[in-house]
Length: 103
Image (cartoon, rainbow, N blue to C red; front, side):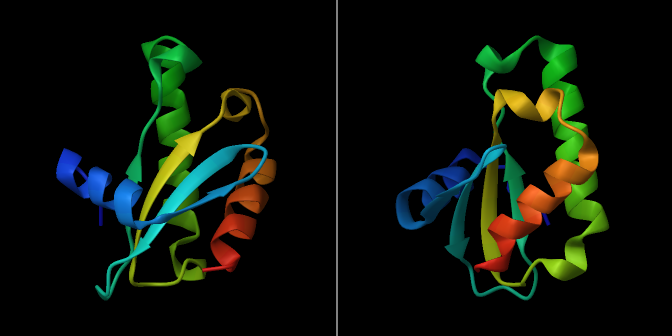
């Protein structure tokens, strides 16, 4: 359920489409698998390790709680923007689900 290899990320970047919102940039690519897989890419410019790990934990929790609302068969790479560190969780959830609705 996770994208981990660099080659998997590169394939999504190369063959996928990009969608953006106020909190995220999301790269999506149809995979044809029964479940969607997720990867998170958080730049060092967004903060120290503590801040980046907090962002990663918040994103994983959003995906875990709203798995049924995300259509199956996609490889998805999520790039958070700096606003994710301070934004309230309900705002992040609404923004993420709005991006996923168009798939």
